[in-house]
Image 1: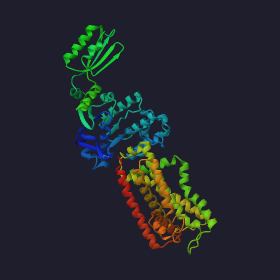
Image 2: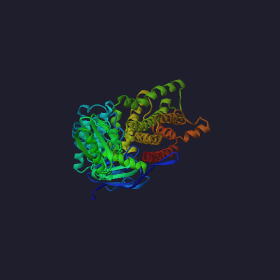
Image 3: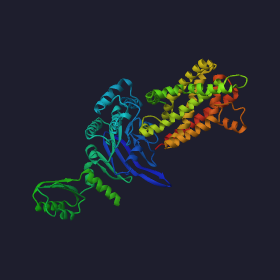
Image 4: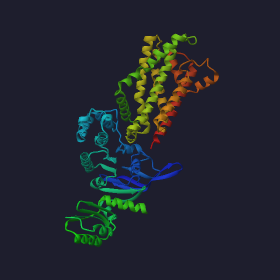
Length: 315
Length: 253
């Protein structure tokens, strides 16, 4: 059995609109290992959702190939659908059905039997804080609760591959954290999880493999460490003073930082430069004030993302 | 073809429908209500009889209301594509483990059952209340005709519901269809006294084929050869509509 769950090769999707074509996905290739949590990142219109729609058989590619667990998404779409569960970007719920019936109806589509379905629904509703809402129709729930129901369905079935398109939209932070824990557990027991997100901290925390795309093209690929190498020489510096040094703005500006954020007496600087220059900046600032704390870190995923997509934009 | 998936779709449709009992009540008794109001009114005011059979308008119109009901159920069911799109569930369902054809068939199955139940209620109460004759031997064929009729019209409407993105545009299309299909047919009146052009248009209308077949099965009027041709034509219409609806569903992106 291959350890590759998803294989994408030179995938292209062109949408025709008023005579001209828009390439939403432009020659993307990647593989996702079984049991991985794979993040597909990119700015709005990067082609993440289109890629996901192709992988989930919702959209046919213009050219190229994609397969899920060895089944081609076009030629064997039904075989693919038997092996996946999808949380689409848009809110989706059976509005006229109760929360419980939403879960049960979904599980029936996936061939679950009535004997196990009720117990599973009970435990999933408890995990998602939906027990008190079990009998309420989805139309009577708030948007956040409807999203809960939508994501909860993922845990009603045991399909080997899970696709989540911006799953945390509308979720409160506590539930989001709990869902992230659940997703980690699912991956640990062998389920492959593919997610798109715009919330980079989410990807940073959750994904062990990340693909950044922009304008339909691959910009960078790898785990967080590999991406940090791809966007080398980006540093985050935090300097806490007892009071901000006089003239720090001019000094910092001369290093052409990517971002500067001042929080009370603390400077947060994101900068792309040689290590020696970074140290000289820190030394120069330290000489102008009473420094209480220094932190120099490699770039966060957000910095990498901005750096790489900016490169794409200027290329 | 997996019956499990078809049952799941059918159960879903059923659950959605039974959440609104008024809707179910209207679905089941709508043809009877039409017969009791419109049919009895025409019968009493115009004293209608047809051919040598000397049957009244209520008996004549029974096939019309049954066909109208299956046409209406089909139109309502196809409209549910819009509801599913609005709820977002439509695109999620397209990722469920079923083929597009199964989705279409499953969606109509529950409504076919409603149509058959509705037919049973209508013909029994029409016999009891209006004295319309019963041809019990033809009931299995009548049930089959209602199943095929409802499916055919659902697939036909689904082509438009899947291609048209705007609810108001679809409503306009269905209103036009109601007018053209229902009135340019043998649903409300016999075609023989009508001008040739009207007759030609009516015989090209699948509603006429359906009404004539159901009328033959309920009260025994019509030429058996013509009925056989009309049955075959309606089956072909259903198969073609299914093909086009499947194509439209496969092209949903």
